[in-house]
Image (tube, rainbow, N blue to C red):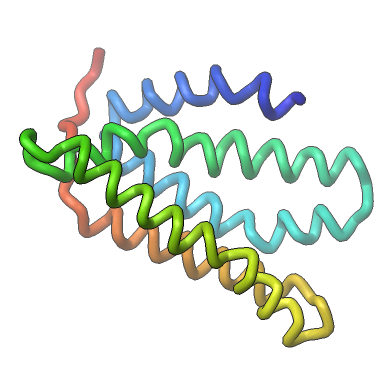
Length: 149
């Protein structure tokens, strides 16, 4: 519940940051944060402490996920020319969600089965996909020039 309460102000904060730094920079920050938090998140889960597990979840969702989610629509839409802007970004985002999101639980289960249900390879997979996202954003053009309001 706490994570949901923070979601709105965090989206606003990351929107303000994208106005000042650009969507691409905020997106890269979010992807790198997710990569950095992958192993610590699982360590916090392993602690079995409700406070530590909640702290890990709140950090990962409200900083990692929300920084990506706040700028993704404008960043992706800006990658396409106006006549196909929203259909292009929507098709790209939805196909990516189906391929990456749809198979991820199966990949995670297969990876965890390799080391007797260990989460280590799953965290490594999260790191690799987050770094791939950061790299893709780095080579993508900046879609909105940063400015100070």
